[in-house]
Image (cartoon, rainbow, N blue to C red):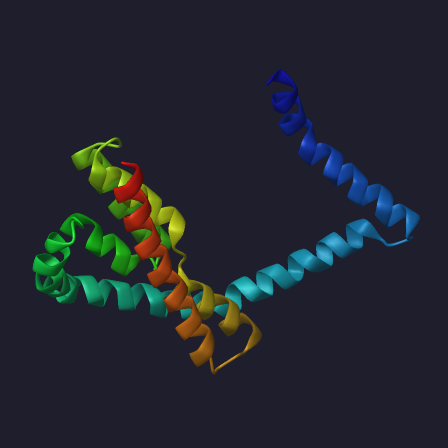
Amino acid sequence: MQWLSLLSLWMIPVLIAFILLYSIWKRVPSYESFVEGGKEGIKIAFSIIPYLVGMLVAITVFRASGAMDFFVNLTKPLLSAIGVPAEVVPLALIRPISGNAALGMMSDIISTHGADSYVGRLASVLQGSTDTTFYVLTVYFGAVGIKKMGDALKVGLLADLVGIAAAIIVVAWIF
């Protein structure tokens, strides 16, 4: 296993050296290209700020309005019947919207129930099995100016639903 540690230590410097040597071989001005890419990155970062602010406001309104608590209480009897703890429902609802909020919820679940508890394991697997669909669509589609994202949203939410179901099944099966 020492070779694996050594490999991981040298992987990034070797990759950077390869890119620089390849750019020299192809006669590409690597520093100028890097600076130009940085300029474009900053422009994109500023262009997506309104989308990010809108997303954060929507999350805050969703949580502060009590809509999340209402949905959790509404689904609690059904979820209890199939063995899904109600503590992970807010995580499943917030994960497609915000990765940071979901990470905070997962941390709260783990600190409350423990990492080796059923709820802690389910929260961890759920966090890794789903994606921040709304965030990805908002940021990336907004950055390139795509306004119609209906099919991408449907597919992304379906993938999240499959990830949630798979997390529940796998954790129930293994643990």
